[in-house]
Length: 214
Image 1: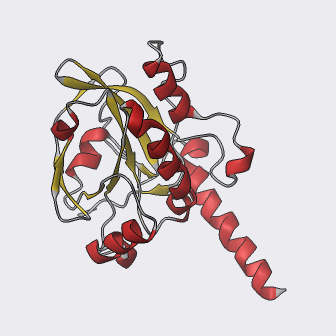
Image 2: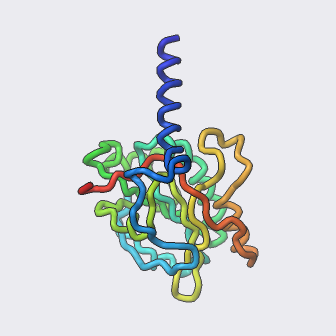
């Protein structure tokens, strides 16, 4: 009984931390720079993947867009979304909107986010998408990412990728079966159907990105 109570307390504390920015207007883990806004063109980036190759946004020039998700190994909320991220890629990669997962977490703070652990996780879960390491956290800062997981839906417009949605993957991080709003899914489906994205911004919940040198 004592173990069960302690686990419940831990989950409540984690959830309170994740909800803090939505309830109190942010915390020290939130990005101080606004980053990309809906309608902005995204600059090319190049990061190392867990398969050892370097991957650039420009590599996806033949796609209709991409789903960029900032995530990590250590964060329980990112782990809760892992299967949903895999499902998004399975559903949309073949339609021209593959997932690009980016880990901006500092392995010096979280050992589960060192390169070998990332490789192990990607292999064990059979990721069908690149899992990139943002060691310098420059890409996360450029995007204005603050939480893990946090999604950015980018549409290919000519030679550029343009931000069409920013925020939550869906509206229930605790229970996939209880989701009522599939924000990323709906955004991509609308873009594929030639329709505007209805919900363009939601406030992300999850583990705060701990910035280096702060």
